[in-house]
Image (cartoon, rainbow, N blue to C red):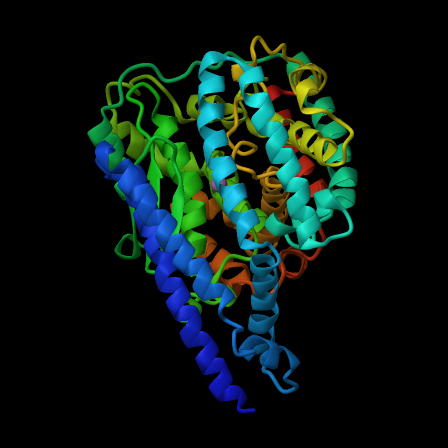
Length: 498
Ligand code: CO
C-alpha cells in the first residue's frame, strides 16, 4: 500500500464532502439572514438535498476500504494518525445508524419543533408531551444502535467525546452546591443600587460601534462578517469565511454588544483553525465545550471585565453621547455584572447560568435512565428552579418549554454549556500565568496577544488533541470547578462587598 497516495485520495474525498457541508452552512446562514419568507419551503428542500448528498458522500468514504486500510497502517505520521482516528470516530457515528432511523429521527424532530413552538406560545405542555415522549424513546433507540454501555453516556459522547455522566454528576453536584451557597451570600449582601443606562441607542451607531470593536478584538473582517438575525449565531463555512450575527435593540446596547462578543469568541476559533486542514477533522473544533469555552471567555472574562471598559467605554460614550450622559464606566461594569435569579436561561447572569444548565442535565439524564416520566417534567422543573435558583415558575412557557434543544432531539447537549464555562475559567487562569499583564492589555485595547495566545494553545490544533487532552496541555489540569468558583468569588465579593 502507498500511504502517501491513500492519504491524498482520502483528503480529496473529504474536500468534496466539505464543499457540500460549506454549501449547507452558507444556505442555512442565508436562511436566517437574507432569505425572503416565501422561499422557506424551497430552501428546506434544498437543504435536505444537500445534507443528504453530504451524508451519502461521507459514508461512501470507505467503500473501497480506504479508511480501513489506513487505520491498519503502521507508519502514519502523528498528524495522519490523528486524522484517521478522528475520521473513524465520525465514520462510525455516521454509519451505525440505519438510513430508516435517521429519516425517522429527522422528521420527528422537525415536526416536534413546530409543535414545541406552538406549545410554548400557548403555554400548553400537554401538547408537547407526546412528542417529547417520542423523542426520548427515539434517543434511547439511537443510543442502543450506537452501541454504548450506558444510554445517556452514549448520547453525551456524540456531543462531547470522552465525557461521562459519572464525571458530570460529581462535577455538577459540587458546582451546584457551591453556586447555591455563593448566590445566597450575594443575595444577603448589601446590594448596591444599579441602574441600567436609559435612553435610545440608534441601531446605525450600534453597527458602527461593533464594526470598530470586533477588529480591535482580533476579528479579521476580511475573513468574516457580522449581520443581523433573530437569534444570534456563528457559522463555520471556512476559516476565511467565519460569519456571526447579532440582534439589535434600541433600548438595550448590551443586547447587541454582548451577543456579538460571545459569537466573536466562536468566530475567532473558526478563523484560527488551520485552513490547510479545512474539511478534515484537524480543521474542526476540538469539541462543543471547547467551542463554548471560547465564546464565554470573550463574553465574560473579557466582555464583562472592568479593564475592557477602561478602553471601550469612552468609545461607546462617544457613539451614544445622549444615552450615556452622566453614566460612568463603573456603573456600566456593575450593570453588566448584576446577579439576579431569573426564569430564562439565556438572560441569566454568570452565577445562576450554570444552575439552569445543571437542572436540565439532571432532568434529561433521568429521562434517559428511566428515572423520570415526561409527564412529570413541569413539576420536577419547577421544584428544582425553586430549590437551586430560589424562583417560582409562573408558567411552563417560561419554564420547561423555554428551550428548543429537546424538541430538536439534542439530549446530551446542555452539559457542554457548563463545561464550556468551567473550561473558560481554567483558560483564564492559564492566560494570566502566561501574560501577567493581561488586565493592562485589556485596559489598553491590546487584544491581539490574547487572541494569539488562544490561537496558539487552542485554535490551531483543531481536533488533533481531544478536548480533555487539550485542556490538560493548556491549563495544566483536568476539568475542575475550582478556577471558575475562584473567579466568581473574587469578582462578586468585590462587587457586592462581602
Ligand atoms: Co455559544
